[in-house]
Length: 191
Image 1: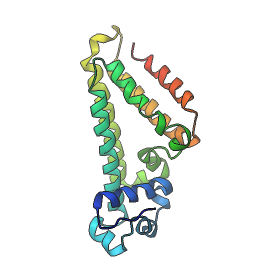
Image 2 (image 1 turned 180 degrees about the vertical axis):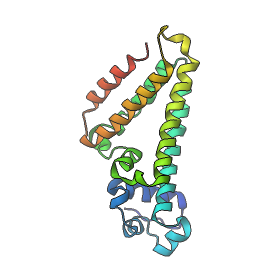
Image 3 (image 1 turned 135 degrees about the horizontal axis):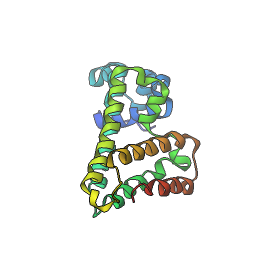
Image 4 (image 1 turned 120 degrees about the vertical axis):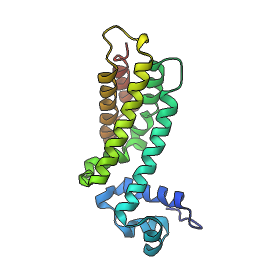
């Protein structure tokens, strides 16, 4: 892995993220992180704290990027249906094929057992809740575009379950066409 030429906290966090993503929280040692970032342990501790504190910063940064993208995509466009479809379709490369094989850092962390740590679990729950809230708010805002029996709350929750399920299944590197077919089924909820 490339080493930073000078200390750049964002670059160091991205390099640490890749190590945690590949090995999982439990399977990553500080030696792994120092090798990837090029930072000595004292520098790592000074910049980020211990392994847990570093991981929380990595997870927070990862979540912030996904939420920012979700806010942009879900809140854009003339209809909730089109916006949700674009948001979900944007994940196809990340939950299929070789690129998708590494899955989602957040989902992997929950499956890795790191979510038993209170702060990690809290961050993952907040992340999932924020994504579901974005979906629910857009579905409510465009409620008139759907049939009389449409339920924005349960639909947002179901879409989140599908998203999380696809991220779990990503480890099996499914074919992109299969993932798109699943998303096509999910989109039938938005009628």
